[in-house]
Structure formats: C-alpha cells, structure tokens
Image (cartoon, rainbow, N blue to C red):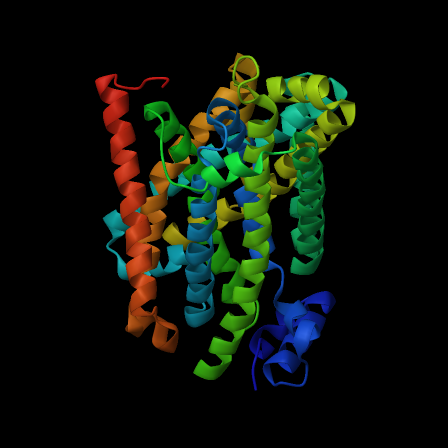
Length: 436
C-alpha cells in the first residue's frame, strides 16, 4: 500500500504519525476532514510567499493610486498561482524530484548553470522584500530603528529555521498561525474601510490607466506568482508522502490540490483585502500613499490606532514567516541545480547581507520593496517555462501529465507574463514611463 515506508527511518515521531494517517487516508480507512488533514501544510508554506511584504507595498500603492482599478489583476494573479502551484506540487509527487533537479537532468550544463544564476538573483530579491518587511513591522510598532529591527528579524528567522530540525509539522503549524494573524489583521482593515460595492465590482473588469498602472500590475504579478516558490513547492511534496503506484500518486495529488485551493484562496483574499483597504481609505483622499510607513500613519489618522496596530502586526507576521521560506527556497535551488548545499543558517547569514546594506544605506524601504517585486516578475518565465515543459511530458510525469486544457492555460499565463515584462522593459529604456 503506499507511502513513505522507505524513508521512515529518517522521519521524526511527529512525521511518522502524519505518514501513518496519510496511509490510512490513501487506503480509504480514513475519510473526510480527518483524511485530508495529513496532506495539509505544504501549500500553506508556499502561500506565505504570496502574502510577503512585497505584496503590502504593491497592493497599497495600487489601491491608493488607482482605487479598485487593479483588483482584477490581484484576482487573476491568484488564479494563476493556483494553477502554477498545483503543477509544481504535481511534479514533486509524480517524479520524487523538485524542479531544479529535473532541470539538471534534462538540460545542458550551461543552461542549468544560467538558470541557477538567475534563480540566485531572484532569491536575493525575495530575501530583500521579506527582510525589509519584518524590520518595518518592528519599526512601526515599537519605534525601533530600522537597522537593529533588521537584526531582530534575522534572529527570528533563525528561530523558524531551527523548527525544520524538529520536522515539517512544527514549522507548518507556526507558519499557518502567522498566516492566520495576517488574515485577522486585514479582515479588520476591510471592515473599517467600508468599500463601495459598485466601485469594487468595477475593479473586477480588466483595464489599465497609463503605464504607471501597468508597472504596478507587474509588481502585483511579481509579488503574487513567485518564482522561488515554484521551485520550493515541488520540493515540499517530493518526499513528504510517496505514492508507489500511479493510482496512489493520483490520490495524493487530489488531496494536495485541496491543500492548494485552501491555502491559495486564503492568500488571494488577503491580497485583495490589502488593495481594497487602500482603495477604500486612501484613494482620492490627499496624495496617494507611496510608502508602508505613510500607510501606517494614515491608518492611525483615518481609522484609529487599532487599525494601524493591526496593520503593523500583519506586516510583522508576514515578514517573519516569509523570511524562512525564502531561505528554504534558496537551498532547494542550489542543491537542485548544481548539487551543492550549504547549511541553512549560513545561507541565512549570506542573504541577510543585501537587506542590511540597503537599510544601512538609507534607501527608501517601500521603493526597494516595489522594485524587488518587479525583479521577481522577470524571473517568473525562467521557473514557469521549465515547469510547464516537464508537466506536459508524459515520459516525466506518467499518468499525472497535464491535460491539454491545462497546458494551453499555462502557456497563456507564460505568454501574458513575458509580454508584460517586455512592455515594461520598453517603457524603462525609452523613457516612456509616466505617472498617468
């Protein structure tokens, strides 16, 4: 029958209990919610990357500058994320390998090396956003200067990484709790914003308003469809529950798909709530809010100290939880592409350096966050296209190969992302970028 017995000697006690529960679900002895519970977790870790501090920066700027205009971009990006993360999870389940490992097997060494280099650049941009976000949360809530706040964020991220040594369940539990904190924070923000239903409905109709809105749309896309988590999700599912037959792998994927729908649905609601809050409170009221610090201050003025405090707590929870996920992704990238591995704590020390340098240099934190998300949007095709090629290949995927409709939709997503990035490059290098 089924799962993980060949790796049971490597499992911690809590993990072994999860595997036994998964086996019971796969055999039909455990049904309903109890049957689903052992499979919940990987998508929640992946979902953290979809609500990281970069989302705060891009969604707040979009809502305060253009109202509900770009709400459709947030919804569309989340639908893309569900499709993409399901393919990443499916690859891990079908092959027992993650995306970088399959790249190394299928591509030439120069191509694999180039993919690794760009993935490391993306990892730096990811860590920058997450690290600055945690530091900003501490700064806004407690008045701690950004540099020492960044050091505290680093200490907390080391603590989360230490949880990995105790198995996947403790880390998943803590991260899910932190996601819950963000949910509560923004549920309250939407409540106090009292959005206009008619304007909100109009925001679901696709449209732009000048190249500045396109730039922010690219930032939203980069903050939502995250290249590093495409790599990570396949690693989270590749050896968690191992199906020994095609039928078992199909059942595992069905369970995992529910995990993805729940986790990405929560992430999508949080992203929409960020933009709705900014549109309801800041759009058309004075100057557009350009920084997270300004959003915190305006919330205190317009909605009261409770709203501002919850905003800061949500930002802090987002930055703390996503900092460890970025480091985990970086480790997957290095091990998969070039078969090299360094201790997670050493990697965390290395990736802290750029954020500390930027904070120490006095660069505006929100500007760095928004631009980091634009950089991430340029990395999406380099993760997405290999994933699409692999998931469409029956030799690699077996019976879990993509259906034709899935492949067509995934190629359409890749086409939209690449076209949007080409437009942004054109605007940047021709000086055509405008505010309206």
